[in-house]
Image 1: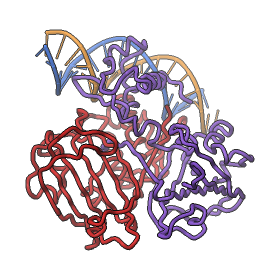
Image 2: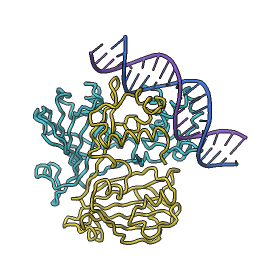
Image 3: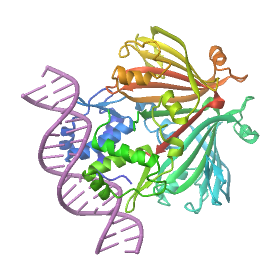
Image 4: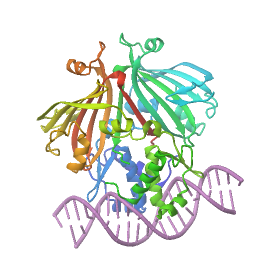
Length: 237
Length: 237
DNA sequence: GAGTGGTCTAGACCACGTA
DNA sequence: ACGTGGTCTAGACCACTCG
């Protein structure tokens, strides 16, 4: 849920940027003006602006103001954890998801260097196609608990949406690793890979609000269709 | 520069996490206790904790406290913009950098979908080897201005360090795109690529504090040596 | 009910950029 | 000198967790 004042202000400004009410290169109203505009204290405005800064929508320049960046062209909703459905919607692709398999099974004992003791899971395999060309094969293990069941039809749609809206689980953070490897035969076949058979693998561990691990994912991407876009701020510590 | 109270507190707690004074799974002292510990107000403590949350070092759980995550195993200094030298130091690799070329030239007119009007630049080509195996070929254009010159020896070392410590330029943010493409012949040769000749390309645009573009980079990675690790929080807006 | 984090306020002082 | 963002404070109220 998003309901705090600073979140709503951030949302409002973000949408004004998205729809070019505030244009690239423009300065936002000063923090003082925004205080009056939204009827809040300055620290609240600043929380909203910090959020937008992290997202890469604005850059604050001391002594001058907050400039609207033009990065959204590439990155608007992409950075961070984003599900295929969101990506799809935001990029207007003609994409389709086919569920190849959904079974109850045991989670793998090892994944991305972490050990998992015998845990039940729902395994889901999905093929994503764009214009009937297979581009991504997703293999997910949804751990039970916390994911007790996955009704038919959910996997075709958005698993994240189901988790958040139906089960009220809050997806919070994930670690990802991107590598390029020789594809196993079955994966090469499903993705209709060429002779060289290299595949891009995005492995991720996803966690809930309360630090519970709930999902292991391996996404296999056709190399020629793979693109990962990121906005990053320099982080020091 | 990092000198505000909340930054110093964040640094202090981060180092205590790094050296296991606060252990994975532990709760940090409560915000109230941290206030007394550091002699500050709660909002200041909260800014420090928010910073650590973004970095993926802790997770705040309402009603309970702030848990130390064990993500650092993978990600400690990696997310965000990090130069090869920093990566190298943090991962204890036996790496070497060879400067293949450094010349003054014009920047490309187009790069990652942005247009650049005729601008002078310093072109630097560097080969990174680990245990004498070529793993990355970096091609950088450093725009002049703001980068007026690059003394001999800097490119072997760290360009970022030179920009920040000598020229006092503040590197602020970057956009990156990762793709997999057929390598051009010269690049395939320099990286000693196999027959299939696929190469991972990380292209990035880097900007200063004041939103000035100062660097265009293309990094060509041997696919079998490429690994990109990321910590991401779910961002909603 | 006691302790925790989440939000918000109204003010203050500072450092920087512009003119 | 003035307006901008950067930092910090001391208090307040709320929602949540746990015993």
